[in-house]
Image (cartoon, rainbow, N blue to C red; front, side, top):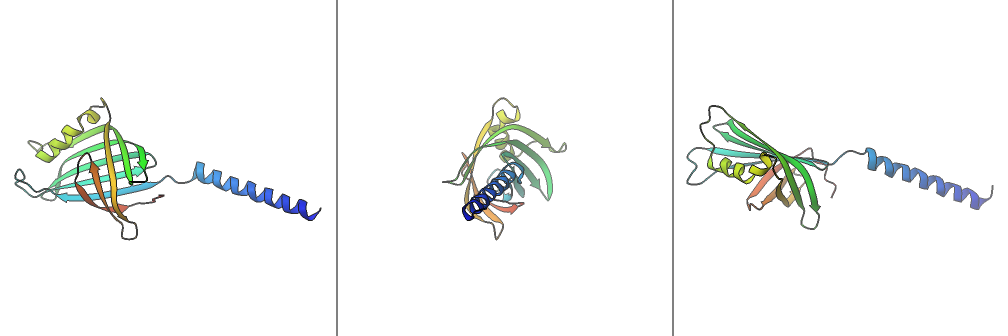
Length: 173
């Protein structure tokens, strides 16, 4: 066999191997996973006890879930779980545009009423909880440090900033 034919055969073989590797990575490769665990203390004139809110945001592929946990005196009093999908990822502003289509309220039976903050979260996500129409929500990554496992995020239309721990993160952007 001539030198040119051997080189051509080698190049074609390499191209086929690279194509197979790319195809396997695309079709069989792991999904992107990202979990934020964010906590905040509630302060204000309507808060008379030490209340904390924890938001756990889990992203697996395009699926997303948000779990709001309302904690009082170290125990969980109520939770809201919202789930849906990532509608769009805007890389220029590092914003996840979410479409939350389902919701569930988990309430402690001994709790007489919801806190004002939880009532506001329920009211803003009412349509998603009743599965009438999706809740559109943006989460912007203000700052992220994978080495230190933290992120600063901002919800829109709300303007609150949250400091979050990163868990199970495999960021691809």
